[in-house]
Amino acid sequence: MQHLRNFCIIAHIDHGKSTLADRLLEYTHTVDKRQLQAQVLDDMDLERERGITIKSHAIQMNYKYEGKDYVLNLIDTPGHVDFSYEVSRSIAACEGALLIVDASQGIQAQTISNLFMALEHNLTIIPILNKMDLPGAMPEEVSDQIIELLGCNKEDIIPSSGKTGQGVMDILKAIVERVPPPVGDLTAPTKALIFDSVFNSFRGIIAYFKVLDGNIKKGQHVKFMNTGQQYFADEVGVLKLEMSPRDTIYAGDVGYIISGIKEAKEVKVGDTITDVLRPAETAINGFEDVKPMVFAGIYPVETEDYEELRESMGKLQHNDASLVFEPESSAALGFGFRCGFLGMLHMEIIQERLEREFGMTVITTVPNVSYQAYLTSGEMTVVNNPSDLPPPEKIDYVEEPYIVASVISKSEYVGAIMGLCMDKRGILKNQVYLTSDRVEITFDMPLAEIVFDFYDRLKSISRGYASFDYHPLGWQESKLVKMDILLNNKPVDALSAIIHRDNAFDLGKKICKKLKDLIPKQQFEIAIQAAIGAKVIARENISAMRKDVTAKCYGGDISRKRKLLEKQKAGKKRMKQVGNVEIPQSAFMAVLKLND
Image 1 (cartoon, rainbow, N blue to C red):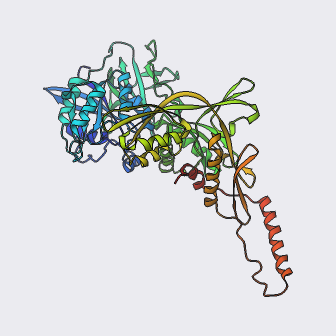
Image 2 (image 1 turned 120 degrees about the vertical axis):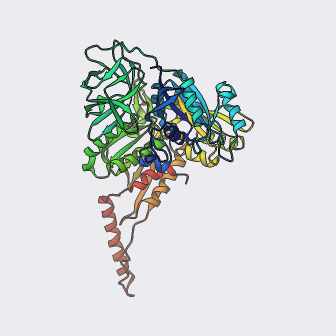
Image 3 (image 1 turned 45 degrees about the horizontal axis):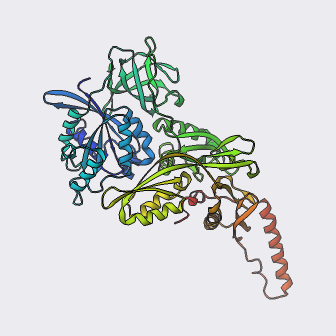
């Protein structure tokens, strides 16, 4: 165990984590020249295309230092705020962390957020100043920011470049010298923490674990303590670029176990693996259950694909433990699922992965957050879906979730950012100048306001310089109402939303206008209305497609033309009573982009 080191890489999005991980793998000869490519650990097409890490990736490297052989277990983590749950799980399996800061951009919101997460777990932090080869690098300035944040010495900061390979050998040396080896009892009963799982269509669910005490052998009879299920370890091994089988994984090491598990609910991330014959007395404190921030309905385009969608969602859940879903039905869309996501990017990625990996075309409804409705009878109900909100006469008051949002930006954009946050019902709490040019602004604001287009608008008003992070604050009472969208007097439950009363009129008007542009004309007139209860607050009409029935009348009496027009009018009226309006998928998503 003295020659083992477990560490992860944490940073803000796009600060060069994956590129630096490539260099570490190259310099320790873990990956040969043929297999080496940019972002070698990002194995999803989606990750490569977008240039972001979506899932944490574990890999083992061998490194020789001062004549001794060391084993380094690296976990590369995502940088986006929506995937911070992945980061928290990776941190639980490590003793040290490389904190990477872009020398041209400095410290950003997610850098601070991930750092505090690592410090809570008492990890040793190695600060690294990355992208030193860029012409816009500001090493002195950014070093001062790191020293102020960490309280370290200037000599502790390692200047590096993932592109040129500068400083990589210094990083490997620092990992061996500064990160403490794992602690554990080799003779104690087996105790291992599951920190991730992936689905393999041939081998079932593969669980990744870190052994804290004892060891796990091939063929061992093991038990998962939370679920109480027992299995035989068909194969155990370590994670190289491919999985590499071993006979035994000892305390302190990270590995994988294949035991032919087929059911999603049998593997819970944060569970403890122990021996059946000699079990551990207590389970390890796993991770807190994931708290979804954004809820949306996902429905199959064809109703008969419902079961296939359920299966696909289950398989996706192995790869992404932060996805939460339960069945629901909608009058407009049939059977589908109510899904919980960690944010809007997470929702987008899940939808994209369903289409790419499982060939499922789905309809996603308008995202919303959870509310707590307190009834006049004294009961409290949780509302995840606008259609679950009780009628107004039964409600005493409604509470919505609030968050503490922190935005770090250049000082020249402070006015615009404050304006945006005030528009979104934010309350300014604090404003701190990190340097003469960088400000951290803290707001309390409703989570529902950031669900839609907050992040996009923040990026555009700050020209991409603002970084954003948030964490839950609790519940607060608000004047909330349910707004229904009616098409020809029939409510479309998939477009209903719970919104603040003061914003209802503007929002209703915008949605009706947007739908008017997107819904194709029919043979009859379509009325689009936004209503709160029985009161209509906005309306738009889509006129009918009209055939010129009087074209065949050449001259003659006006009564002939009038008779034909009256006949057409009666036909349209009858059609309106039986006609259904098809709503295109673009209409559901357009509600998210009302300000475009």
